Length: 149
Image (cartoon, rainbow, N blue to C red):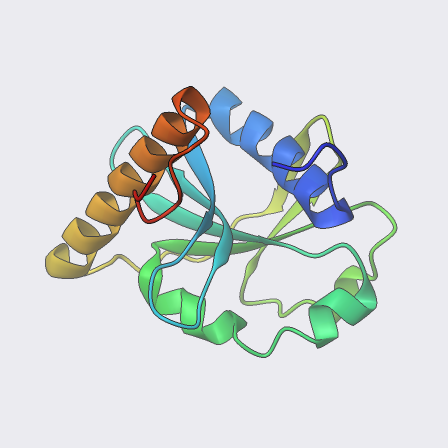
């Protein structure tokens, strides 16, 4: 990760800290399918999967044309924004998290749409592999995201 975090990455850090306080573990920048990359995927204590997209500005949100494609990859979908973000832009049928670099708060729970068992298995495997690759890359900086030194 770069020395200087971007605004969305700072929001993701606060979201991940809050998710941990709720019993969730998280990974960042996971690819559920070609052309999609979620900011945060959270795995709950009962196996629930939540996607959180972090938006640092109006322009960041309005340029995101792929967000509805994320809905089929998690049980719940949230936006994470800071206190200055114009939340009226966000679809009401999605969850809302207010975040800063240090913590977050779920202010609107996302509706649940449970994944099918086969899709859940795929996402659990992706989560595990992504987390393991990140850990291995920390221990061995010569390892790339595809596992090739």
